[in-house]
Length: 185
Figure 1 (spheres, rainbow, N blue to C red):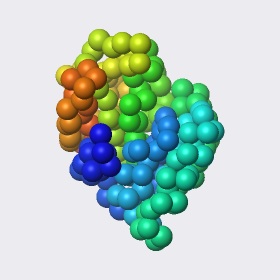
Figure 2: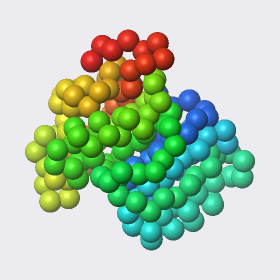
Figure 3: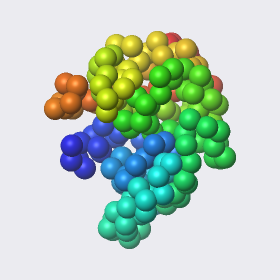
């Protein structure tokens, strides 16, 4: 996928500004897109357990035009363990949740990091059977039930791209209830 694809998969769920986390950010393909969409008024906590990936990501972020992107704060950490993050307006998990066998308990803990009305954006392979590289994908058909079990509502698919691995990648947004958000999960 290209940068334009990353932007398109996130754009419907992101408005400029706010504090977000990109969990399992790796070298930052989606962090770059999120930084561009949040613009300078935003902040991103980019979390990955591999410090070298975050260093590569920082070098890529330096290539963005000055004053055109959100501030990115790298954090070496494992998103499957408790993280010391501030209240968040949004979370992105792009191609990282499929490493978790039972995602609901983890997601429930992550939802608690969101402010009421905060958005959770999932980018995932549209399959329920994985492989060695993508062990536990969550199909777009199964995601609404998983999201609801973790305490999210208003689940909707917002993007889709073909993939040579496991057919397609989709993006979906869900919301933490509160702040006038009616639970329709």
